[in-house]
Length: 183
Ligand SMILES: Cc1cc2nc3c(=O)[nH]c(=O)nc-3n(C[C@H](O)[C@H](O)[C@H](O)COP(=O)(O)O)c2cc1C
Image (cartoon, rainbow, N blue to C red; front, side, top):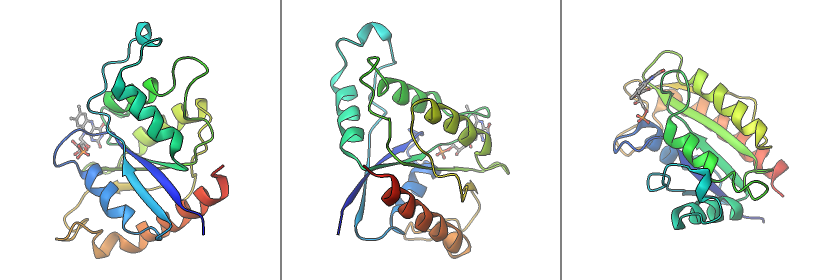
């Protein structure tokens, strides 16, 4: 049985981030041959093209962890109808220097949670656009725009009953997607 290491990137640095909680809870719905490791993006410098020839250690670590993963799971909050700057910063870092990006070909699933009714739909669409340019194949359906409501998580931090079936179905499709596209 193959093993699939998934690099998880959460576009929020907030301690009580819903998206971070979602990343942890949704990983518990995956089969045992999948393991999930969150890549840290909070310690990355602001991207500056002048540094391309001398990337910071945190950037090298980010690139190494993406490179060694068989798949990606990106969770984005929605900030002003797009993705947060910290997430774009991480994406830009790992796309450079030109020709030495690490994104291409990594199958990705997108999730996002927001208290807003549209549940990160706009942010996820922007993210898909960016990832298409980087040649990252993204799971198209099912889409998952999660509106944060009481009961989304239970007391143990698992997905609550009301959303469990929906997110289990999402995870089942994601797992099949990664298995199909992982190199
Ligand atoms: C700068 C900023 C802009 C925001 N813009 C949006 C928005 O466009 N749509 C939305 O649904 N929520 C928006 N929100 C609310 C976020 O969805 C909410 O803060 C959410 O909890 C952020 O995700 P997190 O819990 O993972 O940190 C915004 C929040 C901030 C701080």
